[in-house]
Image 1: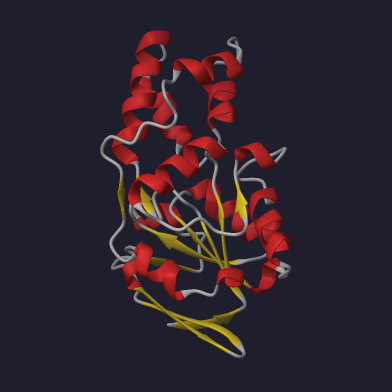
Image 2 (image 1 turned 180 degrees about the vertical axis):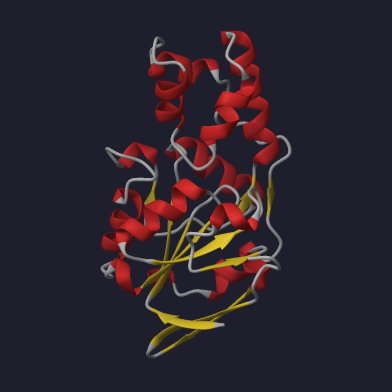
Length: 217
């Protein structure tokens, strides 16, 4: 399959950086400390700002206080860049890609630095938006920062909340099946197994994005 666009907007965790072990470890410890079934947290936390997750599973607690109890958001033990992520970013013109993550800025920058990924010129984090994913604001803001209409963007997302956010923003969405099964990303335009399945070429007319489908998607 192939698609022409003007820019690519990336989620961070689960798309460019494999942080599943770190995130799971932090949430599991927090849930145990607070007497909350981890299954309740796990069901809603993927791809969403931590504050909103806490508000949903523990509305009786102060979310800003609980963020600190999650532990060091900058923890890097076990973090890795997904195969092909760095090469893909380095191939893209700097004004043709951005990141929109549900993590906070200090967390996101620490993770990218640890795995050696370049920082984008447009970097939207949970600190920059009033409403996080699945609201469209993160991807709307990322596209606006590049000066490009969201409808001319391709978004790479690994979480249902992120897919919904991108679709509401008007973008074409490729689900990346690293943290969720393909059927959980069925609302995406297509589902790929990982970023290495992409072949992106830049030209005068914009970007040409080719991909291989994930089996069963």
